[in-house]
Length: 189
Image (cartoon, rainbow, N blue to C red; front, side, top):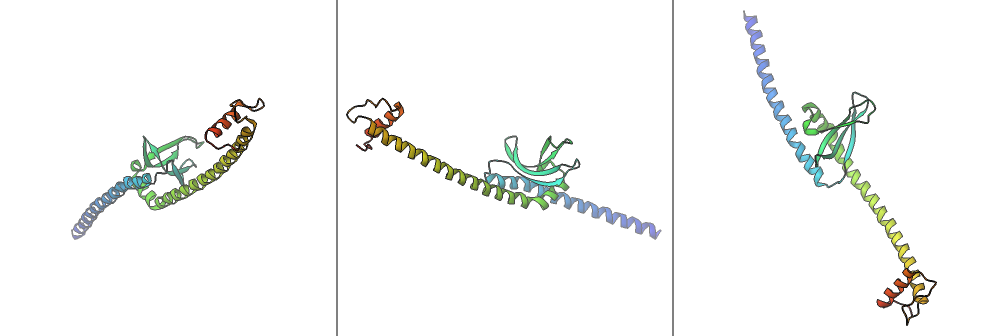
């Protein structure tokens, strides 16, 4: 009989322990769940303006699974993206808050820092592209301004200073530039 009581006591102890652990697991999962909107708000505050995505694992169909920060119903969200077909062309997007607790915890542990690193790299890449855009635009505008200045100088020489009548050989646009230059007092006559 003492073996039965001992076995019953041991089972009771395990059941009590499981209940306590389950309660703690639910509390920890709730904390992780509460962190999701905070992380989304943090990433949204960076104002990236376009989605970022990192490859996580290979899915069951052999195609990658991604952790992405993109718009879902007009709101920037952390999402898990999976392909739903064998070709890898159909993408299913689920907000991180809607995936299973174990997967959520795994993603936070393994990939949250990586998506933040990727966001930094993405902003750096955009800065570099925009700086290149500024350089090439400044060069182009400078070249156009130089051409217009040359044409303006030619128009001023070709127009009779006493008349608004352009030389017949000049296009009307150059004559207009010359009139504007005269009106602004920037002629070279």
